[in-house]
Length: 65
Image (tube, rainbow, N blue to C red; front, side):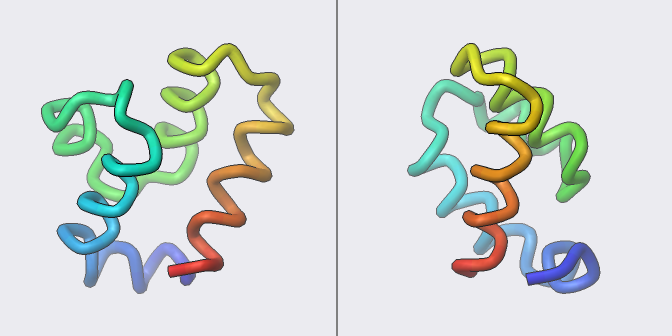
């Protein structure tokens, strides 16, 4: 799934992402609105992952959508 597709299906993506990354609040997902770098940053922050690891995890998740 590319970023254009995420913009069009944000609610669907957001629901599945909330299941995967439950430490990120609904309000934070609303603020992110599909911006990959912000998703990566929050995954890094909440789960204590290195940037490269968080990027890979987010990219894999996006690809699976």
